[in-house]
Image (cartoon, rainbow, N blue to C red; front, side, top):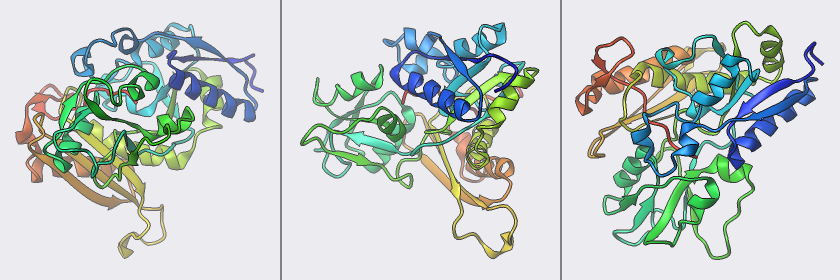
Length: 333
């Protein structure tokens, strides 16, 4: 046990967010640190009738949770890693991303049908531009409807109001123990066709930079391999900048068949990144392998921007104030 009675964990109040907070508490308990909970309502939770793109992008599910830690009302902010902005310009002064304890399946799931069996012209519901453009790339005949709310309400949309299927994160389904009703079709989407959101499936915990007790407790449950892979994805997103609403996705995995030039050092990472135009007419993808996750993420982003024509897809404000690239808007699970 640390010299603090219990770490106070700030979290959103959705069923998935509470599962995540309890999971972090369980891992902390195993490492000898007790914890308690502070439930915080975020802007993204309050304004479920507003499309995420209109709420100002990334941060709508984390700002109030982070503020509770900055104020001292809590010691640790527990998040889905995909909800955290990657750009330093959008970070919160005084907080540090102290650990990523584990990552579940990062893939997306189409619930209600498979890509192949969706009838021509079907409507798929999703609040994510990233998911829309990649599905439209696979099936240009599809139409799309916006989708907000918790996981249960989104799954209940299948078959209602002309919605043939919805897209959700596999990690959310697994963590909340969902199984399909009898006769309902679903398809786990291969990242080769549907790249996940940066950090999807990973847990993340922040604390105050000067809180050495919390930092030590969180370091004890950090998974360096997860942190390294998600770090490569976040470096990709960070290089794209801080103000973009263009669809973006990335997925980092260990490179099982790495080129011989990497030798026997740190295990190489295979990173695939995606950047698309707002209208979905152009979807750019690029894959590279490297040992340095930060450098790899930046290299994949710069290839998409400079070599693949990504800078022509739209204009947005970079963290340095020029017109460059940015980070995508937030998306629900």
